[in-house]
Image (cartoon, rainbow, N blue to C red; front, top):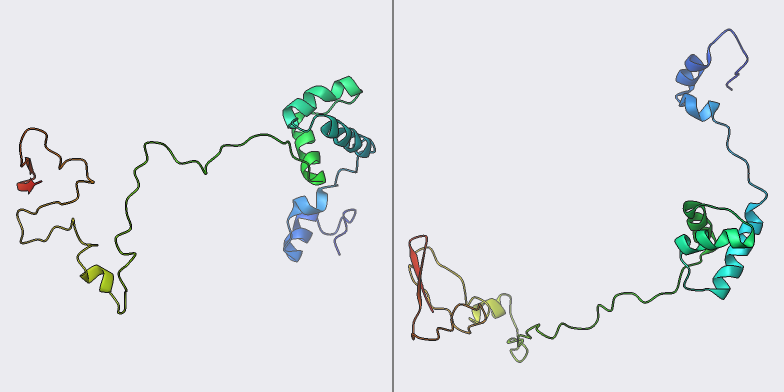
Length: 164
């Protein structure tokens, strides 16, 4: 047991012997504020009247009721009570009108063995092989293959040519 008033062994040495931090011995916790339950009741009452108030608006509205609390205290108390503002969030389920949909080409293909889909040729359309200098890209979903004036568009890149 640690004794703060003893002169035989200083507090630092006692804490070191017990392998605990000195701040845990010297800290005295702050007591509960008696006005907090009233403030929590007022926050609940205001939120029933204005359910769209968040912690910022609630902290700004509280002085009209005779209470003063900062935003972080209001936020903490709303979290303790499990209260939240009601507001419209982003609708992420709507797709963008310019988003292209690609067909799933393996839907009707029965896959019966390992790597069956990879061997079908549908998956490995755009792979380069080290011995190949040229390869053709079919499908046109890369945005480079649709040549308007010529039938074939040749692109030179890093010594290899790409035919579309």
